[in-house]
Length: 567
Image 1 (spheres, rainbow, N blue to C red):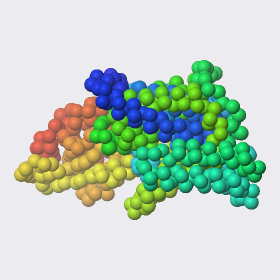
Image 2: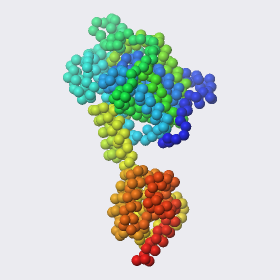
Image 3: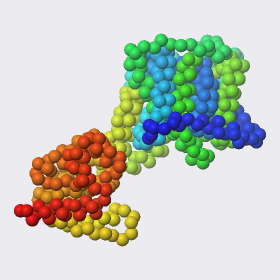
Image 4: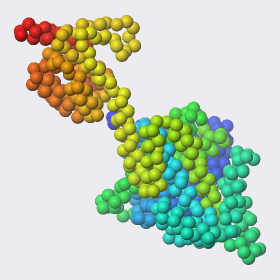
């Protein structure tokens, strides 16, 4: 993480066009057309499941997808609405309405841009994998739960948002299952699942929508018993024009109210987009500029709300579709957005005939693919701490709220990181003899004789608050006899925080009170600067801060010898 220097913003599209060719253009156009066709049913389904209209889902995919490809830091990333946002968007709309969602999404865009500007792209990747798997699986189960009503044709309205009350309502209503709706959903599910077995290049979701919609239309026209709810039945005739940009009212009260939701959108978007980019890099061999990707995602989320859209992020499934069909530059992503725009302008009336149970089947398959159950099984073979983190994040996501799950998940990530740093930070105590080269790759050894009355403490790792306490406890428990001089060897201390400085000051003060001399050894420049800034160099004496252990031992031995002679 680096807060200095210029902004790390270098969109991949700009560099890709410098060495572009007609062959590459042809491949990108083909890939973009395929991805656009694959993205169509998903954009519609994600829009409806999020509590908005299919039009909003498509507008998001068009504008957001274009901006992610135009400004992003990955060559093949496809942006748009994703399943991960369904629950958070649905809950925001339920609490604050569409204006609240627009404000939260725009605020999330600002947060993402700030994260990219301050070069936090690499930091997001350090969130422990069990946390990502936990809330992804939780989101998958929640998405599945939201589709039961449409898939079974229960006809329920005002369904509770919470997981347990929602399933309580379902269980009481299973007697109301509509046979025609269930048949439509099952047929859609079978087509989606079986299509890849015929050809992996065929978009199963789109094939299911085309076939089932056509059959459903003719069944409604020529039979009296087949009445399956369609998109048109629920939403009416939808507009086919790109919405005019509109603003929204913003004040500090609104910002404070929506900040937790905006933070959740930003963190979730950052994690999902960078996870998708990492997967893509592994397949293509390219390298994502994480900070540019965050800025691109941020701009997309900042712009989309002005057109009524929902949050945007990188989509793994569509990105992989782009790669497998030959897309290698952001031009494919731009083409995908143009394809969706043409469909929106000229074919939107046909979408009114798509059965809701068919879209429910699409999202059930999305939820299954998101669940990552094989990964969960694998994690259950790992240490209990990872299993606990996964289960806690999963349960918080399902039972409570994604915002709470991400906040607690990030807190767990910090705690786990500190715990592992503490576990890997060693504090060693030496007396009588010290091997200068111990713990290094330097061949041979140089053994220093440590005089009687001299103790050497070595901290192997950062000297932050957890380690500072650990050092203090170990120093007290390891003392059998009061030494004359204590050498604190700090060659492997990469940084020191305020608590570390405070404990160091207490360590020096208490030692001097007991008549024990303190010598610091191997202090790095940045650590020395922090010590000097805190005024500890004046407390210990600048001549007692040595740049090498050999000088420190010679000085300590001399002090111990002089003290012994004066007794």
